[in-house]
Length: 222
Image: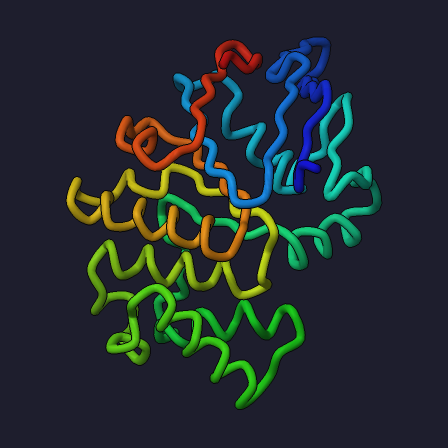
């Protein structure tokens, strides 16, 4: 059974009398342990789709299912789905500049209820899992781009999500560091049996993906 499934997803933005369709009946299923690369030009709808899959945006039509159960509810209920089941990795890292690597991960753990020594131990373990055991007490300004992205990945794993959604995770990295991050993604997906969707323009993502998809004018093309 897919861990996350989009069925006939549409998204239309309304502004005054203007209607702009962005997604036009998207079907997409992510299996546990599977890595899917999603490519498409600017304006193709890939970022909108990522936000709907991550329960940040609501679709105009269609249905989103998590472990076979339709995802519906208030903004607060959708936020709880995000905290419990979905991890995000962003192009810009989005780390708190005044917090150390460990504190950035601890903050995410605090949101799911872990506090004090428990959160500190778990944050340390997550950073060790992404090979940052010697950088735990560094501020983001003292980390390289690749190290910042590893912190962001550790933070995304804090809730033990079944699904990881990554938006251009190698865009700000050089090719060698980008390749290391992709290897890390593949190891995490396979070892921990997590579904991973990577929205990208980077052709190297295909080398670690189990399958690649393209989106054009709001429709998925295999």
